[in-house]
View 1 (cartoon, rainbow, N blue to C red):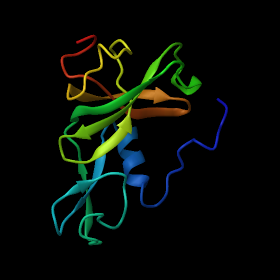
View 2: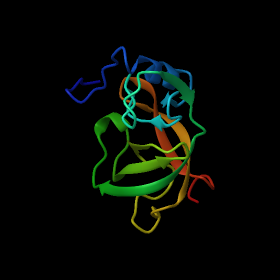
View 3: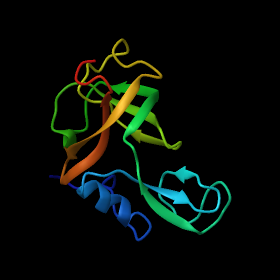
View 4: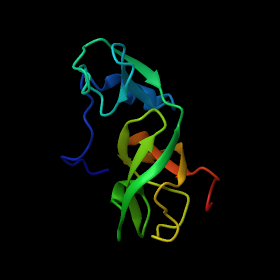
Length: 140
C-alpha cells in the first residue's frame, strides 16, 4: 500500500491508543483530577491542565454529531463509492473524527443524533481503526 503524509504515526503519547486498537479496544485519556475523558490523546488535560492522566477503555457507544459524504472513499479503505467522514460524540464525552459504515452513505440514512456503536475495520496497512455503525446493526 502506498504510504502518504496522512498515515498515522504513533508517538509516546498516543502509543496506548494504537495498542488498544490492535487489541480491539478504544482507549481514551482520562484526567484523574477532573474525571473527564478527552480525545485526541495528550499527557495534559485540556480542561484543567493536570498531568495526572490515565487510560480508560471506551464503552463503544456514541451519537452522530456531524458528517460529510465524500463522493469517493480514500483508496486505503478498499471500497469504491461514497464514504462518510463523521464527527461522533462518544458516550464518555469527547468527540472524535471517524466514519459510519454498514449503512447507506446518504444524507437520508445518516441522521444527526443517531445512536452508533463502535466497530473496527482495516485501513490500508493498519489491521484496525475505530469506525462506527448504526446501533441497530447493519442498514439500521
